Structures are given as structure tokens and as C-alpha cells.
Amino acid sequence: MKKNKEKLLHELLEETQEAKTRADRIEIFKKNDSFVLRTILQLAYSKSIELDFPSGPPPYKPNDAPTGLELARLKNIIRGLGNCVKGNKTPNMKKEKIFIGILESVHPKDAEVIIAAKDKALSKLYSKITENLVEKTFPALIK
Image (cartoon, rainbow, N blue to C red):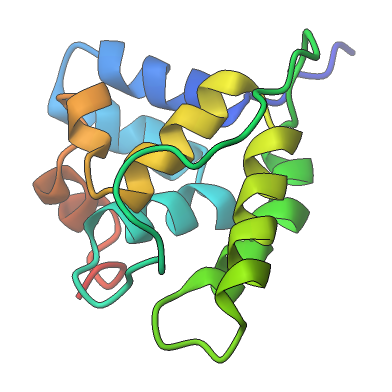
């Protein structure tokens, strides 16, 4: 039996963006529900979560590896974002090092997604992935 290849974060968001209907987009999100997806959507749309960085990409070297980290493996890396939240006691230099480390260890398109989520601009990359869609899919996620 052939195992389905685990999606990368940007692949999941692209698939969701290309879905024909809102119901299809909700179904894709629910079918692919994960810690990583919820973390990125929460970062992008929750007004109470803000990373302690200026807008735009930090100085980092995009990962030139031909593959990326599947959502299951990305989970361990993305947990570091919790150390980068405003108001956290982690020193700013360490926050920047953690954030750059995350960006440099993921697929370049996933890094773009993480930066867009940090800047509350995910819907600029994926116009059909809106705050309203996230609220309909995961009602308690961004309250």
C-alpha cells in the first residue's frame, strides 16, 4: 500500500488556495489539521499573538535543500516561535537567532509563509485564506 506523501506547509496552503469553493477549503484544512497549520494560522490572524520582530524578512540565508520538512517534522522546529513572542523574557538577540534558525531550516516557500504570518500578511500570499475562513474552520483558534 502506497503511503501518501506528507505535504509541506506551502503545498497545503497552495492546495487550499486553489480549492474551488469555501467548503472545499474548510475540508482541506480539517483533513490536514496539525499543530503547524494551527500555529501559522493563529500567528497570522490572532490579534493577541505577535512576534517581537520588525516587519519584513530578517537577514537569513534561504535553505537551498531541494526538499523541505513535512508538517510532522516541521512541528518540532516551529515550537521555537513561542520563544519569539512579544513580552517573552527571552533576550532579543536569542529571539532573532531562533527565528532565523527556523527560517533557514525550512523550505524557502515555507519560510515566506512564516514571515507573512509574522507580519499578519498571510492573505497577501493566499487571498482565499482569510481570517473569516480560519474562524469558520477552527472557531476557537483566533478568539
